[in-house]
Amino acid sequence: MRPPPPPPSDIIGLSGLAFLAGSPTDFERFLGVSGLAAEDLRARAGEPQVLAGVLDFLLGNDLLLLAFCEAESLDPRDVHRAAADLSGRQP
Image (tube, rainbow, N blue to C red; front, side, top):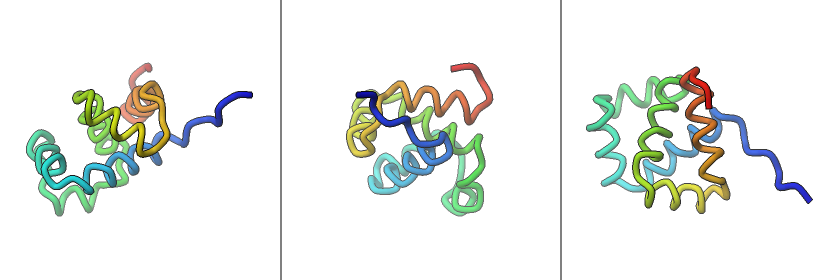
């Protein structure tokens, strides 16, 4: 039996953003790295480039990535593919 397909890339990105928002330390670190202010992030949260940035941030920290994948029942490869899709680069 095959596993179900992963959610669409934008849903994975939004889930990643919600995951980060649940950890104030990681969320603040993301804001610092991205250069976004919290109000800018709220206004731009649905933009593919912002969501790709969220996923790239998660991909840059193995422990954070694995915790996100476990919380969302995702394979890390799904996060890689979603980040590539959202940014317009090849997976």
